[in-house]
Image (cartoon, rainbow, N blue to C red; front, side, top):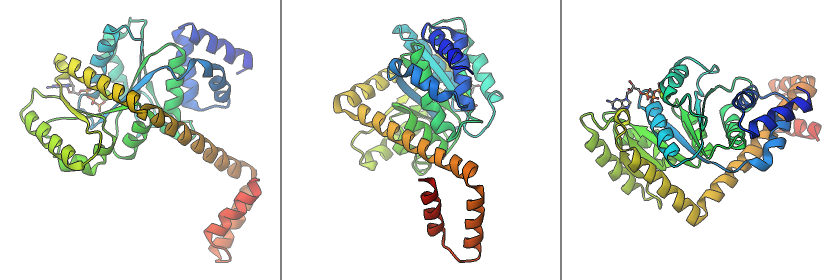
Length: 313
Ligand SMILES: Nc1nc2c(ncn2[C@@H]2O[C@H](COP(=O)(O)OP(=O)(O)OP(=O)(O)O)[C@@H](O)[C@H]2O)c(=O)[nH]1
Ligand SMILES: [Mg+2]
């Protein structure tokens, strides 16, 4: 794209043009060379939203909850962006398309923008693309950004890093609390949501979670909230728990430090990705030679890496 075209897209996005916004998010997905210019142009209009990650097992009710939270945030008059991210899949669509259909209650609301996001072309994948997409949404005036992720393990942790608050959604009978702890979810949860509380065993799950959390000895023990997302039950309590978490973060300075850490990680990741790209593009033969040397045991891998770093200077 020409610089002028990028500028026009950014201007339109700032004015609330949804198609321009969608276009910019596609650019984030693809991670093309124009992205740096986009980020520069929107910079003065960013840093203005509170981001809430919603993670948990497939089918736990994340999308249903997300839709309810959109409704709740709209009642406060906030403009809302929703990103549905599937880190395990290089494609948008599929299951996420279903989410879009489900969220059609908000389809005609200009204060809501919902988007499935894949990160097929983006260097660094999800952890790089998500904060950029959030910035684009901020530029368009979104004050609350909800990020739904599917996936287990590393992907969840990466998304937690990209959010100001992380909701971990579990359902009655979904393994036990020990399993939750093992999955690393205790560390990333700011609020635990026991959804499908209309099902048997919800109280047991809540009790087990609370016991686990008390034993964990963390200074900020996450709240545990029961919801029946399909009925809209518990949504006010959940919203309140998020607001409490936010107020606490703001009072202690934890919000700023979390955001600073995020920026630091982003910069470091960008540097690493660019270096990787330079090695691939500028010195493929040096790399091949070094592989030979290590293969023939003339060099160790650390020494080989040093050679590359020297060449990058
Ligand atoms: N009984 C009951 N069913 C629910 C509740 N919340 C959601 N569901 C149902 O659970 C199913 C999955 O809900 P989704 O919101 O799509 O769950 P999800 O976590 O987004 O699913 P994926 O994105 O596919 O991982 C749907 O059939 C919902 O209607 C609830 O509180 N109680
Ligand atoms: Mg979903």
